[in-house]
Image 1 (cartoon, rainbow, N blue to C red):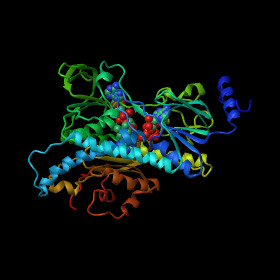
Image 2 (cartoon, rainbow, N blue to C red):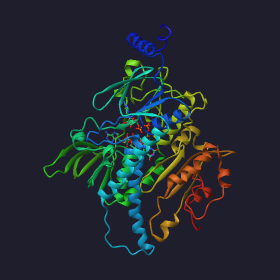
Image 3 (cartoon, protein in one colour):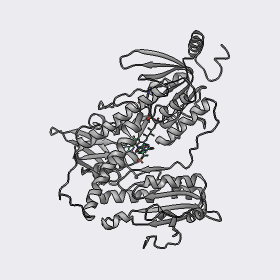
Length: 512
Ligand code: FAD
Ligand code: NDP
């Protein structure tokens, strides 16, 4: 017993409980229990099962404040990447229809968009993914339990069903992959009663109408972008800057494009209150941080995109001594995704300092499963993770922003190659390409290793994905120049970039 209670266990009762559980059962019910059936949890549990482990995955969705709920698969599938990208596609098609006229298509002068039709189709696709995940778990012999999990000790999980039924499960290892949920501001009267979040927007049956989006990072810009694109009146309220943490020159191009595209921006303002009017409209009062003046406008919908909070509350982590970052509430993890308590691991959005992205959660989950099954010691590499913001003008990037590269290497330690280019598809369509831009940041000196790449334009995600391999392999500027382009594409412009910012020369690409 002394041996079992060693380490970080400070609560005798927990130790007794653990000993009882283990002694009574003789062995664990499972090799691995994963709490959270989102991008990371599903990948981890399926990989572990493929490697012969006995696995259970618990997934439980607490309805949003508005009452929206969804099925298996987590944020990405239900209220994130998938419905977002599909609605972004709906918006891009609106632009394509306008372009199509210039390419000879005979299109009625007035075209309109039907929210219910789009949302219904997107929701049906998401439901098919929910079902697909259940089938896959079944095929791979992963036990799926639709219960809310909490930790009893480092080998025991308690699950609570919607109907209040309790289940106790034991496992050699426990993995927490419970992700996060959107935050509501706490000090704004009416914010929660009258506002919605990204947990609701994709599941609305009726069009959100005139919408105020508060917050100007990934979620805020992407949602306002597709709302504008399908013809709605959308305004973004920005507290400070847009896309904090991203290359700010490029972030500026993204918001400039959005403004030209029809999205309204209210810069450096903070909301104060939201009141419901007898007409049903929402009157928002806000303060301009620069002048202190107060303003009001009325919207049909207020969408809070002010960040996400980790889902740790229900897990009982404090009783076990699992260490959290006090500021963010996320679980402190090591390079091997271990927490401060043996046999308990955490990764994905819940892990402190981890990117909040689906592919990192999936890869980290798979690698963790392989390590726990003793098949590898390979750790997740969180360097050079590429990402794309799916705004009307997409923005893809990998590696350092110019600001961060300069901080790390100094102004004289980097060379920034850049170009303003015109996508071929913009020419006949007579679209303004002023914000189509790319930037390759290299270490200065002999090798000119590429440390950052930023790209705005059509299909930025597809373009950035390929170049991310280059950065992962340590590509240099001369490797880039030795890469033959594919003509005519936007991506080929990256292989041709040759104007340095330092030279001050015009970076506009001319000719073919
Ligand atoms: P999640 O996917 O959040 O899964 C956690 C699961 O655990 C959930 O199903 C939750 O209900 C469940 N759970 C929580 N607590 C418990 C409990 N106690 N017991 C049982 N189950 C529990 N990323 C990209 O890479 N590309 C994108 O384009 C992109 N777009 C996004 C758009 C939006 C609007 C949002 C909000 C996010 C987007 N993301 C995107 C981020 C991506 O969705 C997340 O990084 C990813 O889903 C994280 O995976 P996860 O496994 O850590 O958590
Ligand atoms: P972020 O935490 O990135 O941004 C929150 C935004 O809200 C910031 O602009 C912030 O402003 C603002 N804000 C915070 N509090 C307030 C307030 N009280 N009043 C007004 N504004 C406020 O959150 P997101 O929800 O946008 O994104 C979460 C994560 O989800 C991202 O980091 C990303 O990893 C992932 N994601 C990925 C996507 C993709 O891959 N395409 C798409 C969507 C999400 P300030 O800068 O002033 O703090």
